[in-house]
Image (cartoon, rainbow, N blue to C red; front, top):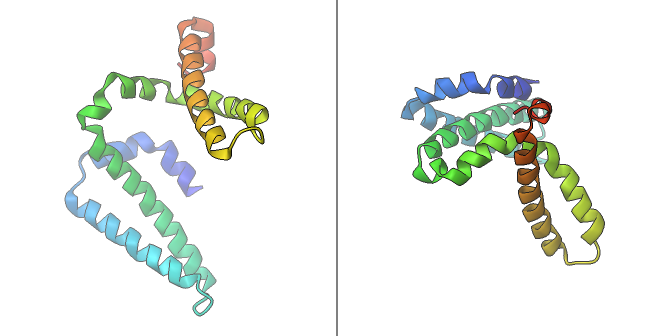
Length: 151
């Protein structure tokens, strides 16, 4: 539930991180490392404390979410991520998410067991990325289908 709430309020969190300081970023990284170490230690058979394991895993997950937001805003200002490709990817990412799994399933149905696994993974990635991008662009052109895919 906490992860869902953080995701729902992503835009609010992003606004907070736009005004972040280096102290906040450093303290988040330090907290993440500390709670990750506590989590690893609490899973060992010598020190098996279930409550400590649960709390450290939860805090480590939440600080990890904050770290993703921090890294995102550090690289967002980069010129590479302002290119036409990344702008298109950003505009079509939700629609690509909607269709990628069906394309992967079709690729696995056709190629799994007939080709080496690494090649199947590569084909799945390339086809799901490109075909879902094409489907997204086609559906965004029509006013009726644009409403169905959130465009």
